[in-house]
Image 1 (spheres, rainbow, N blue to C red):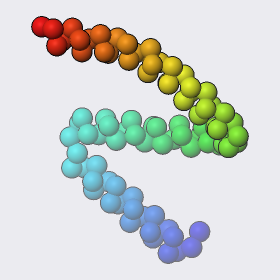
Image 2: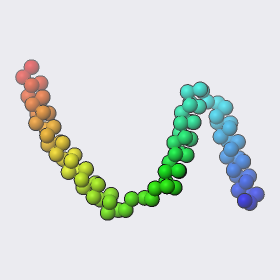
Image 3: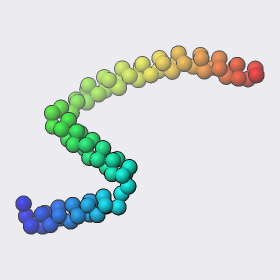
Image 4: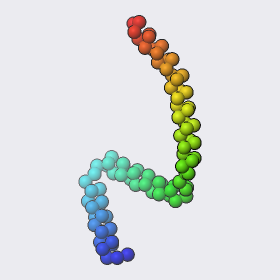
Length: 88
């Protein structure tokens, strides 16, 4: 690793330490949770290949149809609720 990269990394680490020193306990807990999430996401990306576009399109179509059906089923209840509300 070059000196410039090492120096940049050192400066970034120093900034992080200085920022962490000013945080409350609750904020520190949120930071560690986020760092854990980043590590998890990195590991997950390393072991699972990205899905193919055709797979995503198929899933999107499947869930879009399901959402449409649920919305249509819910519309009757919604309109019944509006009618009841208007009659009060």
